[in-house]
Image (cartoon, rainbow, N blue to C red):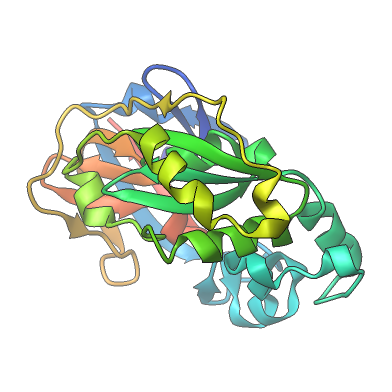
Length: 264
């Protein structure tokens, strides 16, 4: 194999189109330069992102024991409304939780396959939108902690989706919508505690992905079932690699997998 290393989500640069980088051990690969080239991926072993051990990955790149013990995998990460650091209440590690939760967060609208509401740390804009494969996105509120962002998302998802159809996103089965109009409609449903943080001065962020050919159907590659795969890379969108034979590979979904990689 030309390159080896443990998979982590691709890092990105907000350009036109988005630039994608895969970091493997001492190598940084610009995957945009691999478009129209043959890419071979081979699963070698597991490597938990928390412990470094060769143990089956449970979720988020972590083995089962680390997932249920580490502050990096607390329930508040997926459910921001459960955040308690602003109350000085510990979940697993109060110092870590304060560092992550007690910073500015954005509640936003993004359009990947449909309009959805989401939450991210301010420092993750526009990275979060790129990771979701959104072609347009817009901020709704900017709040000082994760809890306020979480309760705002919970309130708004009664009126707009909080899910993305990854299949539609990858097939580029999307339509442009007026996100500013959606923001105006949703303003009335923002909880009182977060109402003062509403922002209407921001304009849409538009994103262009490096895709030469979108699949008509999607075939998802699972390295546990198919330990070696080779195909011509035709695009990158969200955290997915898109191949000529309509196979798609979720890099983030394989965090913690140690792989070999060849590019020809």
